[in-house]
Length: 380
View: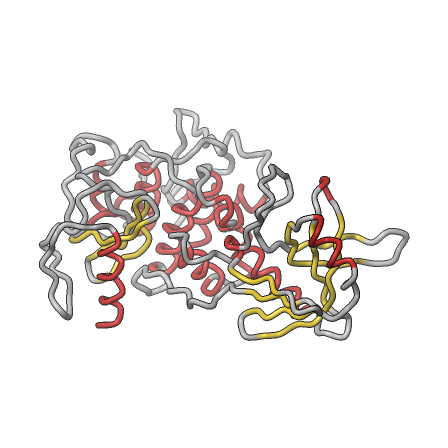
């Protein structure tokens, strides 16, 4: 308890916050700790929210008793905003604002879906904390050269625009030609021509990868897709390659360095959501798209999987505009319509799957799942 609070207080100091009365063992939630607007909210702790502004982190006290100046009492979304705020699922964006019409990003949608996932299974909605070494990889070449870091930290100084992801460990599978099977290479890193010339001399010599407490052996290869030099790591055939590539795939998809606010959300997803349920979260779990807006179909798919035992209160066989979606997306949307979570954006029940999602819409959907009394009845 004291260690966690000390960490939060250290974060608070980063924001050059106004003085606040904070007790040694517990925060004084009557104090206003953060007065400025903030960009993202990603954790709650004993009535205090951890928030980020301009890549600096601080605390917002008493987030569960808000008075939002931009949520009219007669607005359709007012009861839902009140519900999620009082229950700590969502909070405002600072300065007494909720910003009900602001679009949610994919990582914000993932965070909300994961809180709901935990709440629906008897938890308190708290995200897991990622260990400091989670997702940190070290690739050592046979001449002693080391490439290491978190996925988003592996930077290149080439200063070029490229369709090849720069500075991110990646996982690739190349289908072999002429029936020779599959050649799998991983951990792509953009390099300079000088580095490539040196690495060519090291091809097929042993390289080692250290990742999450395990060590894998293999070799490196250089080539030039899209006109830029890249280095790939290929696991040795004598290794348990399936285990090795599974670990590398986890690194490629979920290696979020500590500077990103949604690291804990991605870690929670990777640890808490079983493989069989991950497909429904795919569109909002790819962290490198974290700042892009989520579509309604993305959030609906994740929420339907996060929810438990949605009671069918409407006999609905079809939704007008979802026939072109994947089957699992259609099933998720239908489940939410039948349970009174959704009723469409117009009189005929159109879902608008590719439309972006507002904070008000997200608050309504989450509230209806958590509180059956808020669900849409036939007479509504």
